[in-house]
Image 1 (cartoon, rainbow, N blue to C red):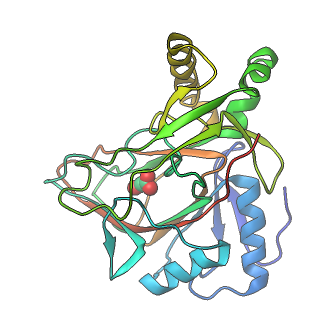
Image 2: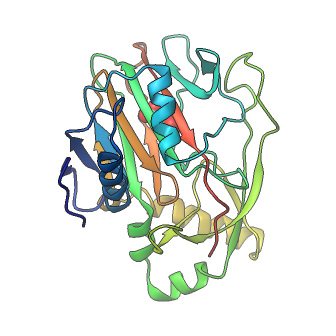
Length: 271
Ligand code: SIN
């Protein structure tokens, strides 16, 4: 774990998640950004409170990490296609991210990071859960890890009907990725199949693939790999899609919850 001169880093659990104090995301010096980046690689998802981000400062913070990603289908706000709208109310049929997933893993180059700013919250609930996919990989037996290391899986997206009459921005992506990927910055191995997008393990028979994916989708739900974040207005979470899955709990119907997500492009997963 790193040592920090400019920020305070308070872990949520020993496995995943940390709250950062002493950083204003709208006005970051290079020194502070470097420490945030180091803490992010160590803790996988970072939480910041009391961040009054404008659309522009939110987008600028995302650009510190890399080129911004455009969601295939979700509505966007303030005329910026890179500023995804997160909104659920009493007329919603679903919420964003209600089910374990890694954002848009069906892209050939899936997003590296997502940065979510929450602007209105229900009176109770609306938490988000995050799970550490290095820990999920490391908790498997050695023979299972050896098998998974040789496999690849098809990820598919289908956003039909998910965003009302909003017209999709591009074709729904699909891709084949290794089941276990090596994180390009840390060099650590992480489980990279998720219930939201992964449909089939290519090298196995259909029944074998279904059984193995079912087991892995259950495995990632182990609370030992997780943290749970309770949002306030102006909280920000920044997670690493290369080694984290998340799910947003929709337990607040018919109340509303809204915010915006900026997503940063990643590279092609490799073994
Ligand atoms: C998502 O990006 O999957 C939504 C997460 C959330 O609303 O907490």
